[in-house]
Length: 535
Ligand code: ADP
View 1 (cartoon, helix red, strand yellow):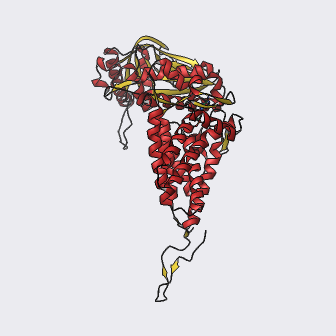
View 2 (cartoon, protein in one colour; view 1 turned 90 degrees about the horizontal axis):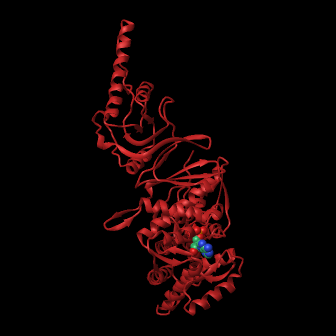
């Protein structure tokens, strides 16, 4: 790019400054090339991680902390990217992750390919708006095809398991896949609710708690809430059955006034009277909680020593300083109402659980609120040998939970392993024939870009990609629309038989996001960057 003096010389001969000094401007072909190049680099980095046999990346942050993962969203999050177009692409991928929680790698790889192939057309002198129009038409048609080839799934445990276990593709969890899939599906079925007559899964109600130690196989679903906290006082019971739980958003301590107050005391008696009065208030709170039947108290705020003492004397178990998000989950799981004013608490505000117990998990103690007949919030307690394993298991569980959520939103699936992309590409090519000349070329490039997904899967499976794509095209021409790449077996196979499916919602979003990103970048023909601020 060029650094210009940012001046224009009109006929008067007096130069006019347009851009601030130090600004850089890159225009036209150069601007586009630079953007496309940057997007391609990001796409190439991610491409090798695609699919269950993709490679992992080692990411080292500015503090030297290491993350090893093959999860596209995480790689993008950890990568420090400078180029604005690369940043744009990452934003789109993050949006994909937020929207459907999966398909991040695919979006970036597809967008990168759309840009690379789009560039070829630009080099041939085709105007960007024509490429953009061709891409848009092809994408709209692809979405239609996606609906056509999608297959409905029943929202039964059995059916959900099939699709969800496929999402647990990280190497770390590969062996424990079926075990974890079972936990994910049970958690999802427990937390799902009905909204406007349709199933609705809010993932906020599935808590993931990690604790180092043991193996992934010790990961368990707790039908209730697990708190990474201890019972606050050694004199309190550690196990309460038939628990009646007061969940407070109120402190059991006398809050220190924010302003400084001066109290003049003239004798030790007066100090005692003052302290007694504080203790009296706390005691009255505890008495009231006991009188409405509470035998467990869990608060978001603090519990001071005096209050702990009174609670212990009444045989009440208490936990303090619990996160707001956990307080809400607890209330939902136990059917409690969050109490904000202790003196107004009523018996019907209490939640119930068969068992509240402090247990040692690994080196630390945790409080389990469980044995709830039908809890509407649950916890997955993840175990594993190291923090890195725990993090990777959590990421995989999140992916799988999102897949479950996507299926509840739209219970339809499409064949994975590149079968979907091959079939859509095939039909987009047929459709392209009806488009006017140059748009047709763009639509054909769109189809080629889609086939890049099976191409990469073929590579990770150790297949020759050219042969693999040719074979896939041939079989799809014969109407075998679920034929794709069996990456574990290293061969072409029927994805329906192998049970490799992806949610339709994810694939539709992939197409939308990738095209949106590519178009956004193709539209730019001018980059104007401000100079670095003067020190
Ligand atoms: P993303 O971040 O885009 O979801 P993944 O790395 O999870 O990327 O890879 C998803 C791709 O891998 C999908 O195209 C999916 O169909 C494919 N895939 C998943 N499991 C298998 C499998 N067992 N065999 C072949 N392809 C698979």
